[in-house]
Length: 184
Ligand code: FNR
Image 1 (cartoon, helix red, strand yellow):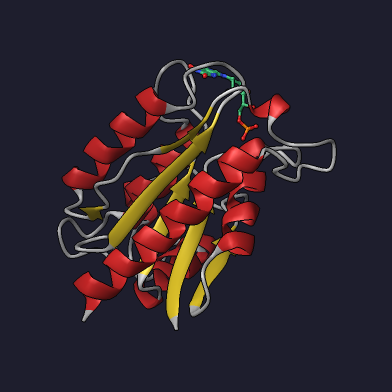
Image 2 (cartoon, protein in one colour):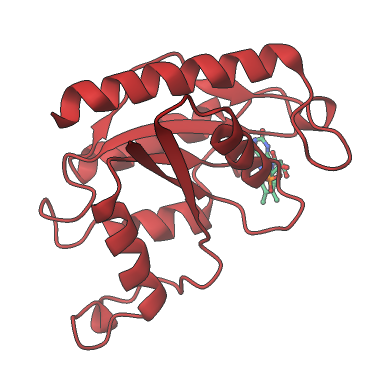
């Protein structure tokens, strides 16, 4: 069983990115399990409490979940052409201690959904740079970028656009095959 920890960069209940992550869990190939870590309880980064004695429990739980997973899948909106604070904050916590963190050499994939036409491509490029900063292994692949999300999801936040479902399915199959190759 290949395990992927999915993390969404939006906290809102009606989030398309949270919905996209649930879709990824649903469309994962056989033998691949996507577990979802919710960032809601993760506080803002504070180096003063980033110690074994004082680290917030949600952060410890997130880092442990990352360490235990074979791979990480980040599914994030783009805010003002960049990485939303929610996602960047989680990555900052996860990246310590520098170069020896649970993200070091962690196979990591990216997806995103946006209301507009960009489909989060600019935000994803920034996340890739952040991932290089923590020496994560970034999956090189055509991105899953879902523009005009309101037209692709129904009112119950189910991904109903068939072409997008195919893209997500293909990405997950390719990602899982790559994770298997690099983690043996
Ligand atoms: C946005 N949105 C947005 N969309 C985009 O394609 N490029 C952008 O730069 C931005 N910037 C931006 C900033 C802020 C502060 C907000 C709140 C929104 C719109 C965004 O794509 C839309 O709100 C998505 O629905 C957010 O993702 P979730 O919450 O649905 O997952």
